[in-house]
Image (tube, rainbow, N blue to C red):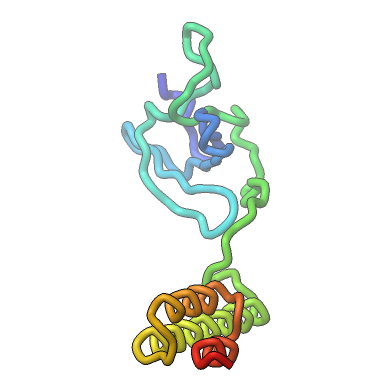
Length: 156
């Protein structure tokens, strides 16, 4: 029965692996509901079948539901804010700060320099191939600097 679904209600994912994902019903039309995600980041809107929205966390037989969404507040009075607990996020272009971006840029430039030096060393080094490969491996791993790699290749 899906007559309990109304605009403004907040539902939480029934599956424990979904990390308490929450959605809010925006409107109900026919057998579908327009919903938006709550939590960190921008709200994502989508349509959902009403059969995925349940009034309780248990089935008619008393088992816990493992699929769909369960109603959190039957009155639909949940606050209209992104109220999900903050989760740690990976740095990306939208949440990285300027000092982090500068550090990331420096690390990328350093890696590019190391790779270019390793390629040049492997292509035309002074030592035997096995020694050059070992020097390139240590250089790419960050164990030695480019100057140390050149000195090791020349036997200095």
